[in-house]
Length: 551
Ligand SMILES: [Zn+2]
Image (cartoon, rainbow, N blue to C red; front, side, top):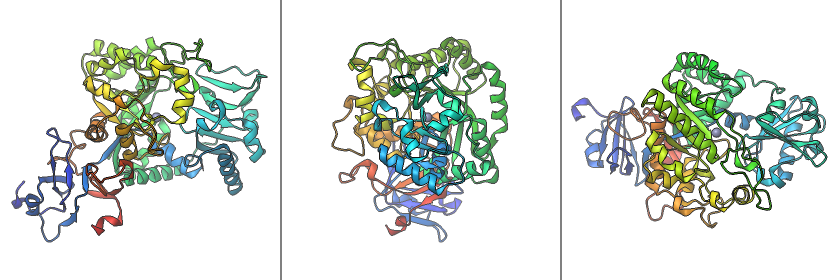
């Protein structure tokens, strides 16, 4: 790059430019032309590229990073929740009931009251009851998923419409919560949610598109320029595709196509067909999401040793393997051979092991591939499995927002795992120490989509909503550069986007974020309080805070 090539379109100067390139260079300024970085260096070097038409942003010491990439997120769910009965933002039974009542009153024509976002820890045993909902909505069915989307709270009418009664057996991959008399009590876990969900009116394509655009705007405002959608059913893919075709999908999106666990290998040809079709603009459908287990809080995560009961005695329950582990090896081997990335959901240490075993089988059959298979969540990892991530080339997809001592952890998790296994949770530093590659994601709408909050927890292991709490397993905390790396170049690698994005390097696409402060400054304050001022994708602002101009 020389001045002879002409002035830059955009220059950012006088800041802390954290490149996350291989040399981890930190400098002051950069220049963008035609959507790409044309120079990165000191403010003085870059000053030569300022021409009469260049836009110049004085950073005044603020920080520039590669755009954040969320390696595991559910934007459509998050966007739809914004359109529906939204429980994510507030807490407590009476608060929830008030929101539901108000929503039902203001939406008299909706045949079903649908919503998301209640918190298991707000209910004894994590299981809300139908009678409470009956008090506020007796005459229409109500279906409310919890924030991790692994359970639903329903009223009596919804149970009746679904024909769920005393005699209804639990489906193979789920459980109907029952009272002492055996009557369904109003919580449906995992696969049992389907019994009601299949009755819900379908979201219209217009609603989905509106929800996805809403989500995209929210994610861009948080500095996110690319993501992996971890639940791309055919309907979700259609929504992305229509935005991409109209040119309104500004984010780079890798869609992880949903593996239907009620079917087998025969679905692979359909998944391949969709991969070929869905290749529009910044959209790719090159990943496949396999959900291998549930979650610990309702005892559906697959564990090696049984869960304990409230008195600390072993039960006979080891959770659920949603896909038979032997069949899983075959599916993963075929997907890997077909050039797919496999993106696992694995929470319990048995599910993690089953996923690793399946990838090992694929490696033995196919040799090394560039699949960059991901295991997401990784709540409990048996120590013997830690080195296998590096050995098998598996990317650890961390959701750091969960790694703190909240009531979900202290009341619903630790007592039932026991002390030893509780110490194996979210072992991010141990994974890094073994040489594993780390990427990060939010799992929004399960958790906040804000990467800075997530990075704060990765670094401190304390809730950003209760910052004076003691840290949770502080030996597993990452340092700030490592956490930033995971959310930028780490996730770009996981998304197969690292050749184009993920670091600030000459020639790469100008995807970046400007924060309102230098996170490394001694007076920076809590990481999660930093704000995004500017987000660029390929040099184009997709979010800009007016405060940016007031440097
Ligand atoms: Zn998820």
